[in-house]
Amino acid sequence: MKSSLIYPDWPAPCWLHSVSTTRQGGISAKPFSGFNLALHVGDEADDVMLNRAQLAGLASLPGQPHWLTQVHGNSVVAAGQDALPEADAAYTREAGAVCAVMTADCLPILLCHRQQRVVAAVHVGWRGLAAGVIEAVLSKFPVDKQNVMAWLGPAISTQAFEVGDDVYQALALDKRSASCFIAGDSGHWYADLYELARIRLRQTGVDAIYGSDFCTYRDAQHFFSYRRDGKTGRMASLVWMSA
Image: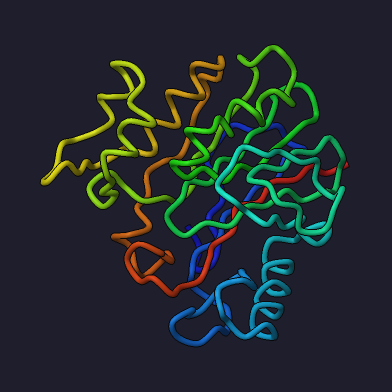
């Protein structure tokens, strides 16, 4: 991890590029200090645009990221077809198209195929997970899912992710999924979002899964956390292909 960027540690093809941001760097003022990349959270628009320009330089982006209007659902779009489409995953087969998702406790997943040129970025909260956003984006990949790799970026950890019984009922659909929940007080649970995502990935045939050693809630130095702070910024996770 560098001050502003995390470079995923996964054995991706040489033509693939990926990065995830932290909150460090940037110019946003409190409560968005400092590398906030979201325009929809109440930060000064000029500051956000300067942060995005800094990101482009730091990460050597080939073009502007294709940002989404994330709605905690299962819609998947091809990067660049529309401006700010309502979707929680973007994929591309085009070199230079940058897929991006923003998070501040939800789980960002980056996907790529080892042999064919297709990549994706996915925003995974519990609602999107229940709606099948992982399965939806993987339907855009070739059928040989054993050649798909996934990197799980900064998200909230089990110890901090307290949820109600509605989340348990929505996601604890079998014994393996139910084991991702630890009972708390008054009908509440602590959910392992990382492992719930791994289960869904493996069920689709994806076994090459990397990352997941973060906690946005506990690491206030490096990460924004909506659950911890309420009004806060957003990190971005991005993936693209060179020519």
